Length: 126
Image (cartoon, rainbow, N blue to C red; front, side, top):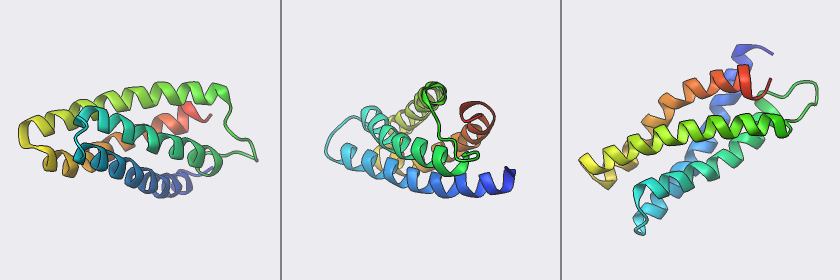
């Protein structure tokens, strides 16, 4: 499968995933949940959507769907990215306030998406 096709699909799936993730994080933190916990909850909701769509569309090969082996790799990738995202968003929130964390989250997660694409293409879904 071509990098271009996979990249386009990854971006579309990532936008849907990111919107869900960000919406959950903003809603939960708005109602008083700590930014770190709200970020993890948002990333978990986005991860479930992203794993399914990326496995079914972006990185699908000849009708093969991802199995438990790929899911285990995805969990490792997700935990690593979530740790980095939560640390960065929490730091932004502590330094600049809740609204800055809301605005900074898409930027943080956008940067992490580059590494996530490469890891997904060459390790998670192979």
